[in-house]
Length: 410
Image (cartoon, rainbow, N blue to C red; front, side, top):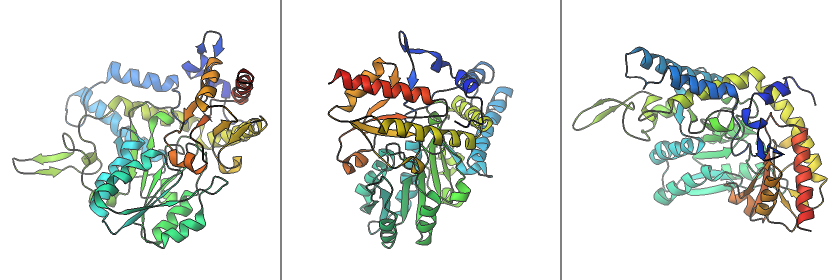
């Protein structure tokens, strides 16, 4: 494989990857769609913050508070730059992608969507980009339509264009499916949505960690993603929103830092982005998130993307060679390194459990994407998912593990 980074050095920088999953069983970590592992650099950045800087932010005037505030706001600017933004105030820190989408549903959706409206989602969405809209629809009464999945695991873009003629107020879709691995043409989908006056929300949880995402070029109005899927800590995510939209939206939560003034009868909201960050935020996690962005930038997102494309093609070839394996989703050129598969005659949980005995960490279930599984008429799948610290040896171990599963249940 063509490598533009030192793979062995990179892999050695993740402490957990040198551990055994079980005695004598090397950890083969293939559950990256759920969460990524953390390099020493990120772990140390968080520890260093707690050892030397820990303080609350924005209101303190002592040295620690000012330094902590500077680090927190540097993280905001750093993450903004990572997705192609020049204005850090368009970055809101949340707990995760799920909270980011809920923020949009509650702060934008509640103020805009009416009973006579419709919105457009897709059949390949994670529940995080379905349930908030279901909940809001139950209260408001608007209609939800769906872009279907083709038999080849892609979005039916002809059907999309016909659904646009219904005049949706919102088009919300995943950039990359966490089950099918499908990478959707986000810029084209966004442009067509804007042509009919729709607002666009892009779920970038699976895309931002794996290939360059320039949100200005794509043009989406909102983008949600999480730190923990891109070598950063858990408990922190991001919502990007266009400044004018954010300024027009009501606050999501009330409390400290989201206000300028409070009287016995009213309050005055703080400016964007602070009006959406009530209470003490995840300061150490923001520092760790920023360190993760620095780490990924040092390797190069284009280098990561190119390597993962080759590894994905290798993984597809190997999995397709195993008799009885059925992989959901498109061919390698249309997907990222996510392989949700069924093994003929076996329950996915049994497959995952036996693989775990061999030290191979995969996931089994519906992966918070029941609509996808219903489309393919399967209850659940086993999912192996790659990141740049995986290699061909990891995939070979997966294949050997699957063969052992077949022998055990023969």
